Length: 270
Image (tube, rainbow, N blue to C red):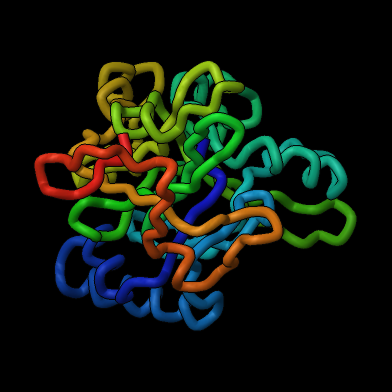
């Protein structure tokens, strides 16, 4: 599952070009991303359980808008803040296979779909008694656009609104099956990373009843060849590096390296 991510460390124009069409729309989105970066600063590493505010793109009246929402969906039926704080630790990710069935996600999945705009995400690889963090990004180094769902929850105690989202996940591709090998989990997962065509379909008015075949296509994982991954410094515990640029930089662990190099003349980690 995806519980660690990175965002807003690239040029704002890069994000705008990945989600917008046409010069005017791209320019407007670029300005929105610039404003968000001024508010939150770049995110080199964020832990989902801290519920960071991250950029999402939603469509209102056929116009794309960039917002900062907190990670961890709080459904509209949540009764109070105490329940909200219990729920959103369990809703960082929403499984695509059951997203239209689970009460926590069903309404948002039908009516409030969004794009989550990130630079990449982190997963841990297990070997023996140790875990090794990996940073996964697009092979072309462009921003990574994931499928998301969002909610606006009104706190009945103080009438303040909480804007939250969840990242949709799907079955892992071959790369993530190798990396995300947690023995305590039944299967490896990967965020639902969207192509340009799938972005527009995800934001459209598709119906889970009428458009099952289309959703089945959307929910297919991205090809392994479109991603690259490398090990990084510890993300958790006493030695964690925190939200700094080196969180994304490669760190070599000798215990993971094979003796033989791959076809590119580099050391292969698998």
